[in-house]
Image (tube, rainbow, N blue to C red; front, side, top):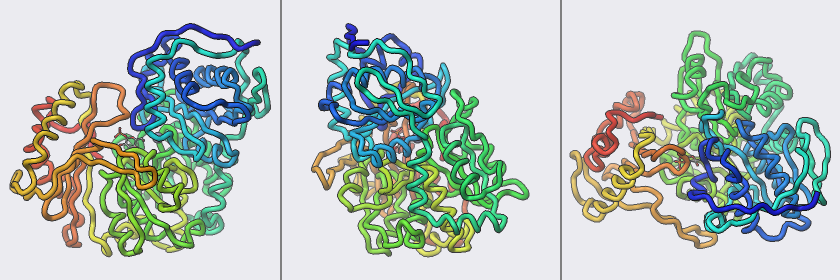
Length: 543
Ligand code: G1P
Ligand code: ZN
């Protein structure tokens, strides 16, 4: 079975977005489409002699086909070893964990995260580097450039590798090891959290409902929560990863996880609810009749981190993406630790964690994580909350209310306008950008603008600069409106408008969020003429 070379021609548009290359399954099914991208990646990476690669995905439709393609090409590239999850399964945080624990040179994650799956759904591929985190922009840009020139695919003419049982196989001189997808990940969790305290919590009758949304988080949550921590069987629902997620949109927010929200707001609701997304790196935490915003979740974890064994020596610093609320900034100030503001996307946290400046980080998009891996981590966040509930004796709601009491409430919402024609979305952003210089010092919709810019980030570690990361409008009272276009969608463009207002008055903290943010919605409309530009009366999704 020698290495074979297949002639190919480049495909347009293989530019990785916020989190790898994401396209419709039908796009990935085109002849040599995946092969072209993988070849571009392998051409950019150094010689693989002696190196280990990790491969796994969230089990969505096309995962199995894609993995076999990658295994053959990895053998042709000359990797010494490829570690692949049993059944082709590895959650995104587990890929990160396996890369780190086995000193691999990198990992390939097959997932379109929270995007729907199935033959008409989405597929994706992302490369992680040796620290276990998403490849930095200089790598993704080089891969894209190479994808426009790729003319030859190097692969092996070999049989499919059996992935359903643990074991070791070989293609050419490459050893292919089918590994337990949960093992390394579970070991890390055991080292971070007080499993005895969580076990006692469940023994005392504490009830959790974890909705894995028919996605890859199920096996991890079942193994840890039910098998190891003693949560009753049935605590984890929708626990079997399905190729189409059973038709669910595996995005853990109150809109898409409506079944969980229904349970948590019903009579006799469990004490805590949680959900994770397609590849199990996102999380949503819900109290009894109480939704926790992801920005608040990050702030609560930061505030109480020292109560958890893995963080008992305190946090070096925290980081959040720019559109994420400033709740964690306030906590950081009290803790007297630095707080970094990065562009959207997990890849920007890697350098800060590698250099020891940041321990916890998070995004408003239901992503929270720490330096235990270099991805956000859904189940980790849920275990963290369980640990806090167990050692403080407080409910989810009272932990969040404690945050608001001490720091005020950062009232927060994100409005998404999905599937807008790309030209219109680009025009809206271009018009906004053009208006920025004239805005500071003016009144818009009756509110005083003090800041108007396009967020740019200089990485404090490697000095790399990322421009145009979102238009920010800041008001005199500290409120913010942020506009940016999504980099993960696969249909037209998605405009995201992020709204934040600080409410110090406890009497006003329970006003409905959308009501409290209405003046900012008016400001966004006055500035960007969203309705006219998008042709939509309402956002498609509000979280
Ligand atoms: C979205 C989120 C972002 C997250 C990314 C990957 O990206 O907004 O915070 O890191 O998914 O999960 P976007 O579509 O906004 O580019
Ligand atoms: Zn995800």
